Image 1 (cartoon, rainbow, N blue to C red):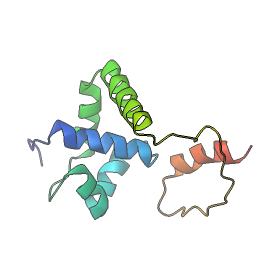
Image 2: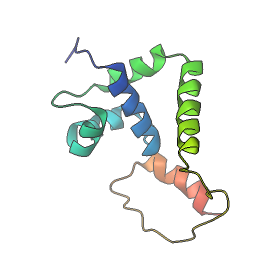
Image 3: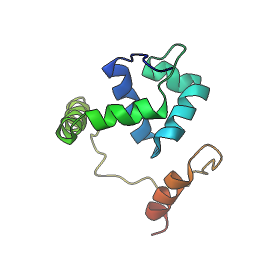
Image 4: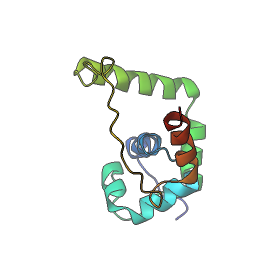
Length: 117
């Protein structure tokens, strides 16, 4: 739907979710937003969701320094709340089976780099 306006906060939530879920492609993210009620709820979309073009435009319109500041600020907030306490002191070697149908090929390749060592 051309011309629909989405709040910057909701669009930021899409960027964060996309990063957390290892989704590299805006087209894939737009599709997941359409079909996944949990993604829509997290991002604040009730009915309409942004197209892949709108997602790309939002990222392109936001300078890289702003993205860095956002992610560093979020990291600092989580650190201050204690979410990372002890995280640098432990490693969990639990094997978790990956549902390859729910994850993009690019994300699987990225995960493979960390698990094949």
